[in-house]
View 1 (cartoon, each protein chain N blue to C red):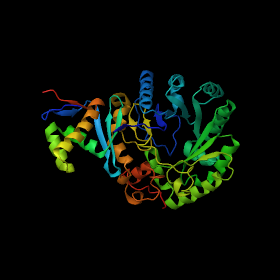
View 2: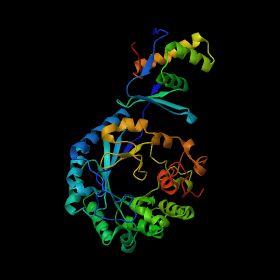
View 3: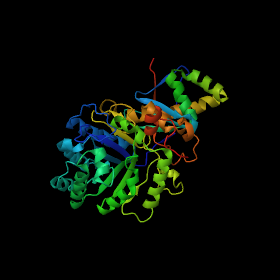
Length: 337
Length: 97
């Protein structure tokens, strides 16, 4: 017997609210209201995060998000103030639609020592493509937010949810991100869940995704204007020998998602409740959840994922499997291997 | 060396859970209250699983010797090692009758 240590970072994706001032067509929320914890409970959760990462001898990182997190601006700033003083939590990102980020807000954010990046989203390189998903005026509003943040000296990351609605614009989106001085660009797959379930027919086929990932890899490895993040399942199929590409899903491995009422999910895109952080604590959830233990065992994967030669680099997206088949251990339906 | 009477019974300490991914030969004990975690081998996991089910020390020796094809003396010696560590680590405790 020996003591265990988890020697990598542990990531918390923390949704402070599900309220939002946008109504994006692809959103993973289903529109039903969720109760929100008060600030004292939020601060207790920070204590629990610190206790957990200290015990695991690792470093905590966070994304603070929503809904739209700036709809709880005062609580958001109180949390940042607390986390800025944590010895156990290394840094945090804010994931926002950017609509409430004024120049003054950007300047206030710039004073946060542990704020690593602010992530905003664009669904295309043109207002027409973006606004068809995120609503009229959102393209310009997002660009204004990016510029305010950049002017304040804050690193900005850009995220785009890829579907048939926008995959043709990815090269232009990479160029746009470069022109706007964005630090990183992440491309996420559309998962047909929540409101986004109505866009099921816009999910890329396996062949379409392969073609897109091949194109993205070629652009991202040829002096790109922005760093394109390819640490995602299935990217490993493009270049198995390139270890900067592809990644195991962090669900069950080194991440948890916390919802506004304290409910914990393996991942925001895999919304299976595995406990409540305030009533159960992280240890009971992390050590005891049957869902997490099922995910951790690659022998539980079915279909082509089960005997895949790339199991150490990719186990597919469990959320995509879940919302396509009902079984989160089924094969990733967008895998082309 | 630890002295254990044949009729002694152990239970898992409060908050202890044991987990396994047997196909990968991964075995663990966790304390969900303190967060302590222990990596186990197959034998120690088997012992803790037996203790969780409720068993006296003598019954454990008999079951262990039979299951792993050991002499009673060798079974007792190996079990004592596992139990001593589990007691010292707060994974199990002796039941007071």
